Length: 227
Image (tube, rainbow, N blue to C red; front, top):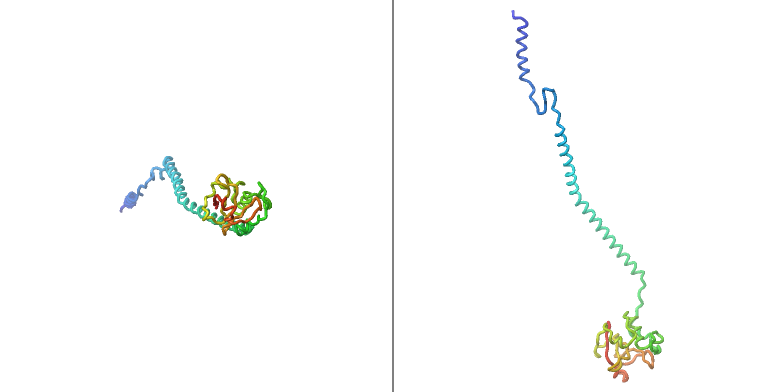
């Protein structure tokens, strides 16, 4: 009979051979001598961490770059909205101010306004509604009606560069008419429609006279327009 030891040997030999053939394949980083995976070196870990930390700012920068146009657009929209609202408020303020402001009194026609001085006495050097000389009268009317300031002197008015010369046939209401001699301008009045002028006469005070008056017609020296 075959001994038990031989039988056992015949059984164990195939089993051991199978175990050798079925040995686990070697995997990356696994050390069979120590029965575990090899530890990652410090340098490799640091390099991986460094790469991660370097990637983070870059990703953050990309995110900021993408977000910035949106923030800029939002600020622009907000600014435009504020400007529009401010314009509406300004328009409303101007409208209210216009309503609250007193309306200027109508002066009416120039002749009506200037006639307010008729009857004022002639006083050389004066300029009021009760007493005035010729240039003082013209000065008051021009300032009050046209808001044009003139000198209190007929010759200075005639030479004032703001005025332009007007021919006798082109005179219109409001032009200044000057009288005197070739050597001197000594009187001034304001031309009115109908070929008349209003002035402060040294003998009769403020009055209206026709331009073809015998006394004044031969003393006429020219007209000036300031408007």
